[in-house]
Image (cartoon, rainbow, N blue to C red; front, side):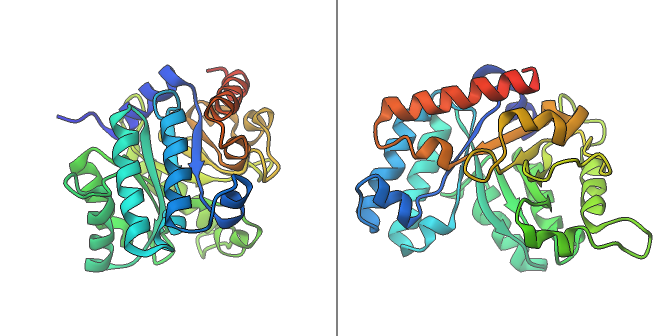
Length: 278
């Protein structure tokens, strides 16, 4: 039986260091690498990253939209990259932020969480803002396949607060409600559960939120968005050991040289490890 995502994630971060590298092939980054904004450029960029980092970095987060914008040929690149990363021992968190209801949510889940899908990933980012219960098909399939979810809870974009920090009739904010749901999903799991939250590393003091969900906390915002590894203990407090810090441009801007990419990833992994006591 496949170990749960939480088990595999803990093992990968312990062995390779607590770093998630985002794979975000947007037009300006392709240009900075001297590549055209077309499928050939996408392919060259993606597989340079895969070949440089797949056997050393714990977690990768491809942003699906940057592949989907090229249509079926772009999705084919994403399929190959996902398979190659996982074959090399990296975990893939597909950043697709899917969210819908009923059979449509089920279809989204099947695209990324069904084991025989070409895009099968170790975990998927999802949006709960049609109600946490709308994610039930993804939760169920993730449990069946040994995959995980990262639910948008307290995101780093400034606009997110108007929804996530809105206060419900029971006096609890929407973001806090999502964290509470995830804690319920992960109750009793060891070494941690498979249902995580997306919580921005740029948000400063979050001591008013209970981040101890016994699950992973995907933390974008380090590097180009302004947060540093040293900020992690201040933001996440006692939950910092379960943080999966994401760095995208901070690593990717070192390309296209493979050795420079590896050096940048190693530097961030070491800095994050020191900051969180890993």
